[in-house]
Amino acid sequence: EDIIVIENLNKWYGNFHVLRDINLRVKKGERIVICGPSGSGKSTTIRCINRLEEFQEGSLVVDGVEMINDVKNIETIRKDVGMVFQHFNLFPHLTILENLTLGPIWVQKKPKAEAEATAMQYLERVKIPDQADKYPGQLSGGQQQRVAIARSLCMNPNIMLFDEPTSALDPEMIKEVLDVMVELAQEGMTMLCVTHEMGFAKKVADRVIFMDAGQIVEENEPNEFFNNP
Ligand code: ADP
Ligand code: ADP
Image (cartoon, rainbow, N blue to C red):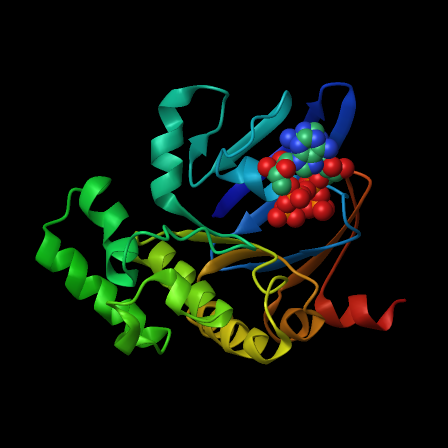
């Protein structure tokens, strides 16, 4: 029941060896926090999981699908794996509701009314149902990030990846985004989160993984991790 299996993953950017023998198994429903210094390969690791990046060596199986550098499985994996970025990545010229229904309508071929009903449910869940007709630029950073999370959830993913979801936010907005992530974790979503929010890690992570210079150098339960400087 491992939903992600990474074995001896190696990746280079040109001559630069960015990921060195990454091995990681994630069970369904597990919450993993990945931390480590800037440039250590955290983002690259999770971007390999949904095929935003290719890799040169090793194997990666996501929800039973073997990731090979073959275009065919990209679509499958993008539907199955939701991703939330540091900078929200919403479409600025579309309303919030249109941002949420774009994938369900065009990728999943859902009827518009059904996609909109689902989108409204998720906007309620992230506590901004009143913002549906606004444009991203009219929302605060914290609200935009909650929209980004809702947009991923509208695609009904089995796995959610977060790449420093609160790093671009003002301090007062961080909590409202973390609250949504905590709820998601408590509902049993499989999550991999690159974050420096150690309070979040302590609260929900089953494991904390520490990366340095392209390697996983430590892997612990949060309590061991925080008691072990
Ligand atoms: P982290 O998420 O831990 O900050 P990244 O995975 O973003 O680290 O990056 C790891 C290293 O790879 C960094 O040194 C970064 O500069 C480098 N890198 C990232 N993307 C590219 C790219 N497209 N081409 C070359 N080097 C890259
Ligand atoms: P973030 O911190 O939001 O992950 P980065 O600044 O690490 O963003 O990277 C932004 C983009 O630039 C990514 O697509 C990454 O792959 C690319 N990138 C990062 N470092 C390098 C690099 N040394 N050479 C080329 N591209 C890079």
